[in-house]
Length: 326
Image (cartoon, rainbow, N blue to C red):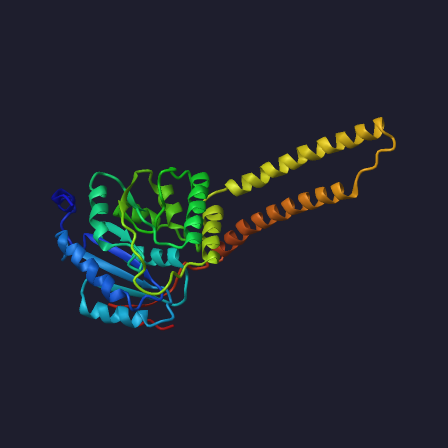
């Protein structure tokens, strides 16, 4: 990375914060810390960065591992959440604890190489607010790659995402963008939607995507569907507009069908409508109505939970602070 990329960071510590949500990764964390330390040392930032681990109520001994690492390295800080809130809400907790001028978000499985952080810092030094990464050789399962493509297409449609931008979980932001993002207090966080709503100054860099060091991915089809619902119903009214358009379309079709039946009856007195076509029409209209009602219910439910103060997360313990009473 060119020296001016590092020199462009103002003096002070830390200059870079690396936020990592943790779930079932106790065995990987020591290696992640060491690789990150070496990467930052090679950038001349060995004394100007921090790692913020957010333990998302992991059922293994991840928190004990984080506490041990934090005791060994002053650049490591850890948060323990009281219950599992999902990747994006956990990241929001880490963002609010981060102090760096630049903030990097990465996964805990070492599929995101810490050595790529330099390329993102270099990209941000050119004046961009956010830098995403594109994977040259994705190591995800086929179903997850297909899900990501669907998510990408939906984001382009609902959030005005540039079509050539891949919304990866490995990204870096400037502090002003972070300060705007963390103002969001709703219980259903979708970080990419917040970022796209804050700035259009976004770039990306190509990186190598590595195989997971140990274990299997914690993402499931259910979690991906939940993420799509957050994106669709928390940051866009396009689904509601779709329901309106469907209503207009069905109304137009109904008028045409009525005219068809009346004309057919007048011209052919023995005309008898078919039972099958009648049932098909009823099921079609009923299905669309049920879909639209469920869609409206999703919006109302999220609004209800936000009004009632459903929290994004609850911090139980921080490595450099006393344990809080439950």
